[in-house]
Amino acid sequence: MTGGGAGRVMGNCFVPASEIIAVEETEIEKQCSSGKWQKMAKPHAFTVYYVKRAQKHRWQCNEVTFWCVDEQLCNQWIQALKELLELQKSRPKQLLVYINPYGGKQQGKRIYEQKVAPLFSLASISTDVVITEHANHAKDNLFEVNIYKYDGIVCVGGDGMFSEVMHGLIGRIQKDSGIDQNNPKAPLVQCNIRIGIIPAGSTDCVCYATVGVTDPVTSALHIIVGDSQPLDVSSIHHNNTFLKYSVSLLGYGFYGDILKDSEKKRWMGTIRYDFSGFKTFLSHHYYEGTVSFLPAKHTLGSPRDKKRCRTGCYICRQSKQQPEEQQKNYGLEHNEDEGGDDWKVIKGKFLAINAVNMSCACPRSPKGLSPAAHLADGSIDLILVRKCSRFNFLRYLVRHTNQDDQFDFTFVEVYRIKKFQFTSKHLEDSDSGVKDVGKKRFGQFCRDHPACCCNLSNSIWNCDGETLDSSAIEVR
Ligand SMILES: Nc1ncnc2c1ncn2[C@@H]1O[C@H](COP(=O)(O)OP(=O)(O)OP(=O)(O)O)[C@@H](O)[C@H]1O
Ligand SMILES: CCCCCCCCCCCCC/C=C/[C@@H](O)[C@H](CO)NC(=O)CCCCC
Ligand SMILES: [Ca+2]
Image (cartoon, rainbow, N blue to C red; front, side, top):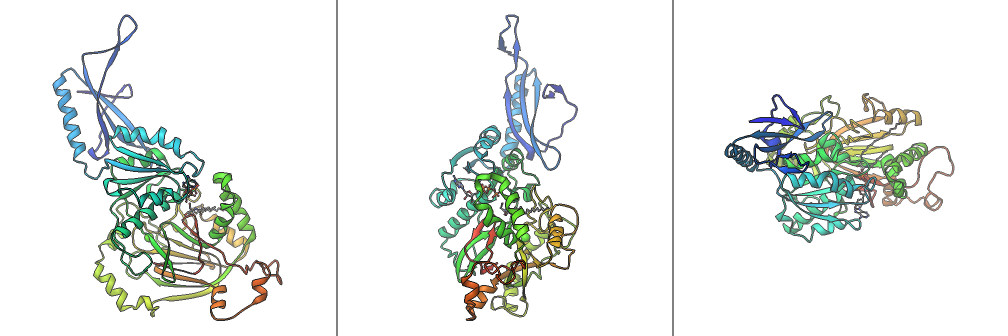
Protein backbone atom coordinates (compact mmCIF):
# COMPACT_ATOMS: atom_id res chain seq x y z
CA MET A 1 0.00 0.00 0.00
CA THR A 2 1.10 3.55 -0.56
CA GLY A 3 0.90 6.26 2.09
CA GLY A 4 0.80 10.02 1.74
CA GLY A 5 0.06 12.69 4.28
CA ALA A 6 -1.59 16.04 3.57
CA GLY A 7 -1.04 15.67 -0.15
CA ARG A 8 2.64 14.79 -0.08
CA VAL A 9 4.25 11.41 -0.35
CA MET A 10 5.76 10.48 2.96
CA GLY A 11 8.79 8.43 3.74
CA ASN A 12 8.63 6.38 6.90
CA CYS A 13 6.13 7.26 9.53
CA PHE A 14 6.18 5.37 12.84
CA VAL A 15 3.15 5.71 15.08
CA PRO A 16 2.60 3.57 18.17
CA ALA A 17 -0.88 2.03 18.24
CA SER A 18 -1.51 3.88 21.51
CA GLU A 19 -1.23 7.17 19.61
CA ILE A 20 -3.59 6.37 16.75
CA ILE A 21 -6.68 8.51 17.13
CA ALA A 22 -8.91 6.93 14.49
CA VAL A 23 -8.93 4.96 11.26
CA GLU A 24 -11.48 5.81 8.57
CA GLU A 25 -12.26 4.56 5.11
CA THR A 26 -11.51 7.37 2.68
CA GLU A 27 -13.65 8.20 -0.28
CA ILE A 28 -11.41 9.27 -3.10
CA GLU A 29 -12.96 11.71 -5.44
CA LYS A 30 -11.76 12.57 -8.90
CA GLN A 31 -12.77 15.42 -11.13
CA CYS A 32 -14.29 14.10 -14.35
CA SER A 33 -14.23 15.87 -17.71
CA SER A 34 -17.62 17.56 -17.10
CA GLY A 35 -15.97 19.48 -14.28
CA LYS A 36 -18.11 17.78 -11.57
CA TRP A 37 -16.60 15.82 -8.71
CA GLN A 38 -17.53 12.20 -8.65
CA LYS A 39 -16.68 9.22 -6.49
CA MET A 40 -14.01 6.97 -7.94
CA ALA A 41 -14.50 3.25 -7.78
CA LYS A 42 -10.77 2.61 -7.52
CA PRO A 43 -8.32 2.82 -5.91
CA HIS A 44 -9.41 2.20 -2.33
CA ALA A 45 -8.06 4.15 0.57
CA PHE A 46 -8.14 4.67 4.29
CA THR A 47 -6.87 7.45 6.54
CA VAL A 48 -5.09 7.06 9.85
CA TYR A 49 -5.37 10.01 12.26
CA TYR A 50 -2.58 10.05 14.81
CA VAL A 51 -0.85 12.15 17.45
CA LYS A 52 2.02 14.25 16.22
CA ARG A 53 4.31 15.54 18.94
CA ALA A 54 5.12 19.15 18.19
CA GLN A 55 7.32 21.55 20.14
CA LYS A 56 7.04 22.34 23.85
CA HIS A 57 4.76 19.45 24.85
CA ARG A 58 2.19 20.36 22.19
CA TRP A 59 0.30 17.59 20.44
CA GLN A 60 -1.42 17.86 17.07
CA CYS A 61 -3.72 15.61 15.11
CA ASN A 62 -2.05 14.54 11.87
CA GLU A 63 -3.34 12.24 9.16
CA VAL A 64 -1.90 9.91 6.59
CA THR A 65 -3.92 8.31 3.77
CA PHE A 66 -3.08 4.92 2.29
CA TRP A 67 -4.19 3.89 -1.22
CA CYS A 68 -4.63 0.41 -2.56
CA VAL A 69 -6.10 -1.05 -5.72
CA ASP A 70 -7.25 -4.18 -3.93
CA GLU A 71 -10.47 -3.49 -2.03
CA GLN A 72 -10.17 -6.60 0.12
CA LEU A 73 -6.65 -5.78 1.20
CA CYS A 74 -7.74 -2.26 2.05
CA ASN A 75 -10.62 -3.55 4.20
CA GLN A 76 -8.29 -5.99 5.94
CA TRP A 77 -6.03 -3.12 6.92
CA ILE A 78 -8.94 -1.07 8.21
CA GLN A 79 -10.25 -4.03 10.18
CA ALA A 80 -6.84 -4.85 11.66
CA LEU A 81 -6.24 -1.25 12.71
CA LYS A 82 -9.71 -0.96 14.26
CA GLU A 83 -9.07 -4.13 16.25
CA LEU A 84 -5.81 -2.63 17.44
CA LEU A 85 -7.73 0.44 18.63
CA GLU A 86 -10.24 -1.76 20.45
CA LEU A 87 -7.35 -3.19 22.46
CA GLN A 88 -6.53 0.25 23.89
CA LYS A 89 -8.48 -0.35 27.08
CA SER A 90 -7.76 2.86 28.94
CA ARG A 91 -9.45 5.02 26.29
CA PRO A 92 -12.72 6.67 27.25
CA LYS A 93 -15.87 5.87 25.28
CA GLN A 94 -18.38 8.03 27.07
CA LEU A 95 -17.63 11.39 28.65
CA LEU A 96 -19.59 13.94 30.64
CA VAL A 97 -18.48 17.46 29.69
CA TYR A 98 -19.00 20.63 31.74
CA ILE A 99 -18.28 23.94 30.02
CA ASN A 100 -17.89 27.17 31.99
CA PRO A 101 -18.82 29.80 29.39
CA TYR A 102 -17.52 32.62 31.63
CA GLY A 103 -14.05 31.31 32.63
CA GLY A 104 -10.88 33.06 31.45
CA LYS A 105 -11.50 34.98 28.25
CA GLN A 106 -15.06 33.60 28.02
CA GLN A 107 -14.06 31.35 25.16
CA GLY A 108 -14.91 27.98 26.74
CA LYS A 109 -17.89 27.18 24.52
CA ARG A 110 -16.13 28.20 21.32
CA ILE A 111 -12.96 26.31 22.22
CA TYR A 112 -14.94 23.15 22.93
CA GLU A 113 -17.13 23.32 19.84
CA GLN A 114 -14.39 24.25 17.38
CA LYS A 115 -11.32 22.46 18.67
CA VAL A 116 -12.37 19.61 20.94
CA ALA A 117 -15.78 18.23 19.87
CA PRO A 118 -14.59 17.37 16.32
CA LEU A 119 -11.68 15.35 17.78
CA PHE A 120 -13.94 13.50 20.25
CA SER A 121 -16.31 12.67 17.42
CA LEU A 122 -13.42 11.50 15.20
CA ALA A 123 -12.34 9.19 18.03
CA SER A 124 -15.93 7.87 18.37
CA ILE A 125 -16.29 9.20 21.90
CA SER A 126 -19.88 9.98 22.84
CA THR A 127 -20.47 12.96 25.07
CA ASP A 128 -23.14 14.52 27.24
CA VAL A 129 -22.44 18.24 27.38
CA VAL A 130 -23.60 20.62 30.12
CA ILE A 131 -23.00 24.35 29.70
CA THR A 132 -23.01 25.68 33.24
CA GLU A 133 -25.45 28.44 34.13
CA HIS A 134 -24.05 29.40 37.52
CA ALA A 135 -21.19 28.66 39.90
CA ASN A 136 -21.56 25.20 41.52
CA HIS A 137 -23.82 24.00 38.69
CA ALA A 138 -21.32 21.30 37.72
CA LYS A 139 -20.66 20.32 41.34
CA ASP A 140 -24.36 19.99 42.20
CA ASN A 141 -25.04 18.15 38.95
CA LEU A 142 -22.39 15.55 39.82
CA PHE A 143 -24.45 14.60 42.91
CA GLU A 144 -27.52 13.98 40.73
CA VAL A 145 -26.42 12.22 37.54
CA ASN A 146 -25.44 8.59 37.12
CA ILE A 147 -21.70 9.25 37.08
CA TYR A 148 -20.88 5.54 36.92
CA LYS A 149 -21.89 5.27 33.27
CA TYR A 150 -19.09 7.64 32.27
CA ASP A 151 -15.42 6.83 31.74
CA GLY A 152 -14.47 10.36 32.63
CA ILE A 153 -15.59 13.89 33.33
CA VAL A 154 -14.22 16.74 31.24
CA CYS A 155 -14.17 20.31 32.47
CA VAL A 156 -13.74 23.16 30.04
CA GLY A 157 -12.54 26.12 32.08
CA GLY A 158 -9.79 27.07 34.50
CA ASP A 159 -8.52 25.89 37.87
CA GLY A 160 -11.74 27.02 39.57
CA MET A 161 -13.78 24.87 37.23
CA PHE A 162 -11.45 21.90 37.76
CA SER A 163 -11.75 22.40 41.50
CA GLU A 164 -15.55 22.46 41.26
CA VAL A 165 -15.68 19.23 39.28
CA MET A 166 -13.16 17.61 41.62
CA HIS A 167 -15.24 18.57 44.68
CA GLY A 168 -18.35 17.20 43.00
CA LEU A 169 -16.68 13.93 42.09
CA ILE A 170 -14.86 13.30 45.38
CA GLY A 171 -17.94 14.42 47.35
CA ARG A 172 -20.27 12.16 45.36
CA ILE A 173 -18.03 9.12 45.78
CA GLN A 174 -17.77 9.69 49.56
CA LYS A 175 -21.53 10.18 49.81
CA ASP A 176 -22.20 6.95 47.92
CA SER A 177 -19.69 5.15 50.17
CA GLY A 178 -21.06 6.57 53.42
CA ILE A 179 -17.88 8.50 54.26
CA ASP A 180 -18.23 11.68 56.32
CA GLN A 181 -15.99 14.36 54.76
CA ASN A 182 -16.21 16.41 57.98
CA ASN A 183 -14.09 13.83 59.76
CA PRO A 184 -10.51 14.77 58.87
CA LYS A 185 -9.31 11.25 59.75
CA ALA A 186 -11.86 9.42 57.60
CA PRO A 187 -10.03 7.47 54.88
CA LEU A 188 -11.49 8.76 51.64
CA VAL A 189 -12.65 6.29 49.01
CA GLN A 190 -10.53 6.59 45.91
CA CYS A 191 -12.24 7.82 42.81
CA ASN A 192 -11.52 5.89 39.63
CA ILE A 193 -13.32 8.26 37.29
CA ARG A 194 -10.80 10.54 35.66
CA ILE A 195 -11.13 14.27 35.14
CA GLY A 196 -9.90 15.74 31.89
CA ILE A 197 -9.16 19.45 31.62
CA ILE A 198 -9.65 21.52 28.50
CA PRO A 199 -7.89 24.76 29.45
CA ALA A 200 -10.10 27.83 29.09
CA GLY A 201 -9.39 29.72 32.32
CA SER A 202 -7.14 32.51 33.55
CA THR A 203 -4.27 30.59 35.17
CA ASP A 204 -4.87 26.97 34.13
CA CYS A 205 -2.14 25.80 36.44
CA VAL A 206 -3.44 22.23 36.92
CA CYS A 207 -3.45 21.77 33.15
CA TYR A 208 -0.03 23.38 32.63
CA ALA A 209 1.63 21.51 35.50
CA THR A 210 0.31 18.14 34.33
CA VAL A 211 0.46 18.45 30.54
CA GLY A 212 3.27 21.00 30.16
CA VAL A 213 1.27 23.43 28.05
CA THR A 214 -2.19 25.02 28.04
CA ASP A 215 -3.51 24.00 24.64
CA PRO A 216 -7.04 22.63 24.13
CA VAL A 217 -6.05 20.32 21.25
CA THR A 218 -3.15 18.80 23.21
CA SER A 219 -5.45 18.18 26.19
CA ALA A 220 -8.19 16.69 23.99
CA LEU A 221 -5.66 14.28 22.46
CA HIS A 222 -4.37 13.20 25.89
CA ILE A 223 -7.99 12.50 26.88
CA ILE A 224 -8.64 10.53 23.69
CA VAL A 225 -5.61 8.25 24.06
CA GLY A 226 -6.61 7.62 27.69
CA ASP A 227 -3.61 9.15 29.42
CA SER A 228 -3.85 9.64 33.14
CA GLN A 229 -1.85 11.29 35.88
CA PRO A 230 -2.65 10.87 39.56
CA LEU A 231 -2.70 14.05 41.64
CA ASP A 232 -2.24 14.78 45.32
CA VAL A 233 -5.29 16.33 46.93
CA SER A 234 -5.16 18.07 50.32
CA SER A 235 -8.20 18.24 52.54
CA ILE A 236 -8.78 21.39 54.54
CA HIS A 237 -10.74 21.29 57.79
CA HIS A 238 -11.41 23.54 60.73
CA ASN A 239 -12.89 22.29 64.00
CA ASN A 240 -14.00 19.02 62.43
CA THR A 241 -15.78 20.81 59.64
CA PHE A 242 -14.75 20.12 56.08
CA LEU A 243 -13.93 23.31 54.18
CA LYS A 244 -12.40 22.41 50.81
CA TYR A 245 -9.95 20.28 48.90
CA SER A 246 -6.90 21.78 47.25
CA VAL A 247 -4.77 20.50 44.37
CA SER A 248 -2.56 23.40 43.41
CA LEU A 249 -1.99 26.48 45.58
CA LEU A 250 -3.24 27.11 49.07
CA GLY A 251 -1.91 30.59 49.74
CA TYR A 252 -2.27 33.05 52.63
CA GLY A 253 -1.04 36.64 52.58
CA PHE A 254 0.15 37.68 49.12
CA TYR A 255 -1.86 35.20 47.02
CA GLY A 256 -4.90 35.44 49.31
CA ASP A 257 -4.90 39.22 49.03
CA ILE A 258 -4.52 39.12 45.24
CA LEU A 259 -7.53 36.84 45.03
CA LYS A 260 -9.62 38.96 47.40
CA ASP A 261 -8.97 42.04 45.30
CA SER A 262 -9.25 40.33 41.92
CA GLU A 263 -12.63 38.71 42.62
CA LYS A 264 -14.15 42.22 42.52
CA LYS A 265 -12.59 42.66 39.09
CA ARG A 266 -13.80 39.49 37.36
CA TRP A 267 -15.26 41.65 34.60
CA MET A 268 -11.67 42.53 33.59
CA GLY A 269 -11.01 38.93 32.61
CA THR A 270 -7.54 37.43 32.92
CA ILE A 271 -5.83 40.82 33.30
CA ARG A 272 -7.45 41.25 36.75
CA TYR A 273 -4.61 39.26 38.30
CA ASP A 274 -2.02 41.72 36.94
CA PHE A 275 -3.86 44.69 38.42
CA SER A 276 -4.47 43.04 41.75
CA GLY A 277 -0.96 41.59 41.78
CA PHE A 278 0.58 45.03 41.37
CA LYS A 279 -1.71 46.59 43.97
CA THR A 280 -1.07 43.80 46.48
CA PHE A 281 2.66 44.05 45.90
CA LEU A 282 2.57 47.79 46.66
CA SER A 283 0.46 47.31 49.80
CA HIS A 284 3.17 44.95 51.14
CA HIS A 285 1.07 43.62 54.01
CA TYR A 286 2.43 41.00 56.33
CA TYR A 287 0.51 38.81 58.71
CA GLU A 288 1.40 37.31 62.07
CA GLY A 289 0.54 33.77 62.95
CA THR A 290 1.68 30.27 63.84
CA VAL A 291 2.33 27.50 61.35
CA SER A 292 2.71 23.95 62.71
CA PHE A 293 3.62 21.16 60.37
CA LEU A 294 4.59 17.52 60.15
CA PRO A 295 7.61 17.04 57.88
CA ALA A 296 7.32 14.31 55.24
CA LYS A 297 10.03 11.96 56.49
CA HIS A 298 9.24 9.00 54.33
CA THR A 299 9.15 10.72 50.95
CA LEU A 300 12.22 10.71 48.82
CA GLY A 301 13.42 13.96 47.37
CA SER A 302 13.45 17.52 48.56
CA PRO A 303 12.00 20.84 47.36
CA ARG A 304 15.56 21.93 46.51
CA ASP A 305 16.04 19.09 43.97
CA LYS A 306 16.90 20.08 40.43
CA LYS A 307 14.76 17.39 38.78
CA ARG A 308 11.13 18.11 37.83
CA CYS A 309 8.25 15.69 38.30
CA ARG A 310 7.01 14.03 35.12
CA THR A 311 4.45 11.32 34.34
CA GLY A 312 5.81 8.04 35.64
CA CYS A 313 8.14 9.90 38.00
CA TYR A 314 10.27 7.61 40.18
CA ILE A 315 9.63 9.49 43.41
CA CYS A 316 5.84 9.45 42.94
CA ARG A 317 5.94 5.73 42.09
CA GLN A 318 8.04 4.96 45.18
CA SER A 319 5.74 6.87 47.49
CA LYS A 320 2.72 5.07 45.99
CA GLN A 321 4.37 1.74 46.64
CA GLN A 322 4.97 2.62 50.27
CA PRO A 323 2.77 0.08 52.02
CA GLU A 324 -0.33 1.60 53.56
CA GLU A 325 0.42 -0.32 56.73
CA GLN A 326 3.78 1.42 57.07
CA GLN A 327 2.08 4.78 56.69
CA LYS A 328 -0.46 3.89 59.38
CA ASN A 329 2.29 2.71 61.73
CA TYR A 330 4.19 5.87 61.07
CA GLY A 331 1.15 7.81 62.18
CA LEU A 332 0.78 5.83 65.40
CA GLU A 333 4.47 5.74 66.31
CA HIS A 334 4.85 9.40 65.82
CA ASN A 335 1.69 10.36 67.59
CA GLU A 336 1.17 12.72 64.71
CA ASP A 337 -2.37 13.80 65.37
CA GLU A 338 -1.72 14.74 68.93
CA GLY A 339 0.98 17.14 67.84
CA GLY A 340 3.83 14.80 68.86
CA ASP A 341 7.51 15.62 68.86
CA ASP A 342 7.82 15.52 65.10
CA TRP A 343 5.61 18.54 64.58
CA LYS A 344 7.54 21.73 63.98
CA VAL A 345 6.08 25.03 65.11
CA ILE A 346 7.01 28.36 63.51
CA LYS A 347 5.66 31.65 64.79
CA GLY A 348 6.36 34.71 62.72
CA LYS A 349 5.42 37.57 60.46
CA PHE A 350 4.77 36.38 56.95
CA LEU A 351 4.27 38.12 53.63
CA ALA A 352 3.12 34.84 52.14
CA ILE A 353 2.44 31.27 53.23
CA ASN A 354 2.16 29.05 50.17
CA ALA A 355 1.31 25.38 50.43
CA VAL A 356 1.58 23.69 47.05
CA ASN A 357 0.65 20.13 46.10
CA MET A 358 2.36 20.48 42.74
CA SER A 359 4.81 22.92 41.17
CA CYS A 360 1.97 25.33 40.23
CA ALA A 361 3.70 26.00 36.93
CA CYS A 362 1.52 28.07 34.63
CA PRO A 363 2.08 30.42 31.69
CA ARG A 364 2.82 33.28 34.12
CA SER A 365 5.36 31.20 36.02
CA PRO A 366 6.70 28.42 33.77
CA LYS A 367 8.48 26.54 36.55
CA GLY A 368 5.98 27.37 39.26
CA LEU A 369 6.22 28.28 42.92
CA SER A 370 8.01 25.06 43.86
CA PRO A 371 9.65 23.70 40.72
CA ALA A 372 10.60 20.33 42.25
CA ALA A 373 7.23 19.63 43.90
CA HIS A 374 5.69 16.28 42.95
CA LEU A 375 2.29 15.75 41.39
CA ALA A 376 1.54 12.55 43.28
CA ASP A 377 4.04 11.89 46.08
CA GLY A 378 1.54 12.44 48.88
CA SER A 379 3.28 15.55 50.16
CA ILE A 380 2.95 19.32 50.12
CA ASP A 381 5.75 21.85 49.73
CA LEU A 382 5.24 24.54 52.35
CA ILE A 383 6.85 27.87 51.47
CA LEU A 384 7.13 30.53 54.16
CA VAL A 385 8.06 34.02 53.00
CA ARG A 386 8.86 36.09 56.05
CA LYS A 387 8.54 39.83 56.37
CA CYS A 388 11.23 41.49 54.27
CA SER A 389 11.71 44.71 52.31
CA ARG A 390 9.60 45.41 49.21
CA PHE A 391 12.77 45.19 47.13
CA ASN A 392 13.60 41.72 48.45
CA PHE A 393 10.03 40.53 47.98
CA LEU A 394 10.19 41.72 44.38
CA ARG A 395 13.44 39.79 43.91
CA TYR A 396 11.62 36.71 45.21
CA LEU A 397 8.62 37.24 42.87
CA VAL A 398 10.86 37.75 39.86
CA ARG A 399 12.30 34.30 40.56
CA HIS A 400 8.84 32.82 39.96
CA THR A 401 9.50 33.71 36.36
CA ASN A 402 13.19 33.01 35.75
CA GLN A 403 15.64 30.15 36.30
CA ASP A 404 17.10 31.38 39.60
CA ASP A 405 16.52 29.48 42.85
CA GLN A 406 13.43 30.86 44.58
CA PHE A 407 14.43 29.42 47.91
CA ASP A 408 17.91 30.93 48.03
CA PHE A 409 16.90 33.87 50.26
CA THR A 410 17.29 34.24 54.01
CA PHE A 411 13.62 35.25 54.31
CA VAL A 412 12.28 32.23 52.39
CA GLU A 413 11.97 28.74 53.88
CA VAL A 414 10.64 25.61 52.24
CA TYR A 415 9.62 22.30 53.81
CA ARG A 416 8.23 19.11 52.32
CA ILE A 417 5.39 18.15 54.62
CA LYS A 418 2.44 15.81 55.22
CA LYS A 419 0.15 18.06 57.27
CA PHE A 420 0.01 21.58 58.60
CA GLN A 421 -2.09 23.92 60.65
CA PHE A 422 -2.24 27.67 60.69
CA THR A 423 -3.68 30.10 63.19
CA SER A 424 -3.46 33.83 62.73
CA LYS A 425 -2.25 35.91 65.67
CA HIS A 426 -5.66 37.57 65.87
CA LEU A 427 -7.31 34.30 66.55
CA GLU A 428 -4.63 33.22 69.00
CA ASP A 429 -5.08 36.49 70.88
CA SER A 430 -8.84 36.23 70.99
CA ASP A 431 -8.65 32.54 71.94
CA SER A 432 -6.31 33.25 74.82
CA GLY A 433 -8.53 36.07 75.99
CA VAL A 434 -6.18 38.86 74.96
CA LYS A 435 -8.44 41.62 73.80
CA ASP A 436 -7.19 44.64 72.02
CA VAL A 437 -10.35 46.63 71.50
CA GLY A 438 -8.45 49.43 69.76
CA LYS A 439 -7.16 47.05 67.11
CA LYS A 440 -10.54 45.51 66.49
CA ARG A 441 -12.55 48.67 66.42
CA PHE A 442 -10.36 50.98 64.41
CA GLY A 443 -9.90 49.94 60.87
CA GLN A 444 -7.66 47.38 59.39
CA PHE A 445 -4.27 49.00 59.42
CA CYS A 446 -1.88 49.97 62.13
CA ARG A 447 -2.85 53.53 63.01
CA ASP A 448 0.30 54.24 64.97
CA HIS A 449 2.58 53.28 62.12
CA PRO A 450 0.79 53.96 58.84
CA ALA A 451 3.90 53.13 56.83
CA CYS A 452 4.85 49.95 58.62
CA CYS A 453 2.64 47.63 56.53
CA CYS A 454 1.55 45.50 59.47
CA ASN A 455 -2.00 44.52 58.80
CA LEU A 456 -4.23 44.11 61.80
CA SER A 457 -6.86 42.28 59.82
CA ASN A 458 -6.50 38.72 58.61
CA SER A 459 -5.64 37.79 55.08
CA ILE A 460 -7.69 35.07 53.43
CA TRP A 461 -6.68 31.70 52.05
CA ASN A 462 -6.56 31.36 48.29
CA CYS A 463 -7.52 27.74 47.65
CA ASP A 464 -6.92 26.94 43.97
CA GLY A 465 -8.19 30.40 43.09
CA GLU A 466 -11.24 30.28 45.39
CA THR A 467 -11.54 32.02 48.76
CA LEU A 468 -11.73 30.07 52.01
CA ASP A 469 -13.93 31.44 54.75
CA SER A 470 -11.73 30.46 57.68
CA SER A 471 -8.24 31.78 58.29
CA ALA A 472 -7.49 29.05 60.84
CA ILE A 473 -7.15 25.75 59.02
CA GLU A 474 -5.91 22.18 59.36
CA VAL A 475 -4.55 20.65 56.16
CA ARG A 476 -3.63 17.06 55.41
N1 LIG B 1 -22.01 29.71 34.34
C1 LIG B 1 -21.28 30.20 35.31
N2 LIG B 1 -21.47 31.45 35.78
C2 LIG B 1 -20.69 31.96 36.77
N3 LIG B 1 -19.68 31.29 37.37
C3 LIG B 1 -19.44 30.04 36.94
C4 LIG B 1 -20.21 29.43 35.90
N4 LIG B 1 -19.72 28.19 35.69
C5 LIG B 1 -18.71 28.02 36.56
N5 LIG B 1 -18.53 29.12 37.32
C6 LIG B 1 -17.51 29.38 38.36
O1 LIG B 1 -16.50 30.23 37.83
C7 LIG B 1 -15.32 30.05 38.59
C8 LIG B 1 -14.10 30.40 37.78
O2 LIG B 1 -14.06 29.64 36.65
P1 LIG B 1 -12.73 29.14 35.90
O3 LIG B 1 -11.83 28.48 36.82
O4 LIG B 1 -13.23 28.35 34.74
O5 LIG B 1 -12.09 30.48 35.32
P2 LIG B 1 -10.98 31.47 35.86
O6 LIG B 1 -11.19 31.76 37.30
O7 LIG B 1 -10.96 32.60 34.92
O8 LIG B 1 -9.65 30.66 35.65
P3 LIG B 1 -8.51 30.14 36.70
O9 LIG B 1 -9.26 29.40 37.79
O10 LIG B 1 -7.65 29.25 35.88
O11 LIG B 1 -7.78 31.32 37.22
C9 LIG B 1 -15.36 28.62 39.04
O12 LIG B 1 -15.03 28.55 40.39
C10 LIG B 1 -16.78 28.14 38.80
O13 LIG B 1 -17.37 27.67 40.00
C1 LIG C 1 7.63 41.58 38.59
C2 LIG C 1 7.44 40.15 38.38
C3 LIG C 1 6.37 39.61 39.24
C4 LIG C 1 5.93 38.32 38.67
C5 LIG C 1 4.99 37.59 39.56
C6 LIG C 1 4.43 36.43 38.81
C7 LIG C 1 3.68 35.56 39.72
C8 LIG C 1 2.98 34.48 38.98
C9 LIG C 1 2.69 33.36 39.91
C10 LIG C 1 1.58 32.53 39.48
C11 LIG C 1 1.35 31.45 40.47
C12 LIG C 1 0.11 30.76 40.22
C13 LIG C 1 -0.21 29.78 41.25
C14 LIG C 1 -1.50 29.17 40.94
C15 LIG C 1 -2.63 29.54 41.48
C16 LIG C 1 -3.94 28.99 41.07
O1 LIG C 1 -4.32 27.98 41.95
C17 LIG C 1 -5.00 30.07 41.12
C18 LIG C 1 -6.24 29.59 40.43
O2 LIG C 1 -6.09 29.61 39.06
N1 LIG C 1 -4.57 31.29 40.49
C19 LIG C 1 -4.40 32.42 41.17
O3 LIG C 1 -4.64 32.50 42.34
C20 LIG C 1 -3.90 33.60 40.37
C21 LIG C 1 -2.61 34.10 40.88
C22 LIG C 1 -2.09 35.16 39.96
C23 LIG C 1 -0.96 35.89 40.53
C24 LIG C 1 -0.49 37.02 39.67
CA1 LIG D 1 2.84 16.66 45.98
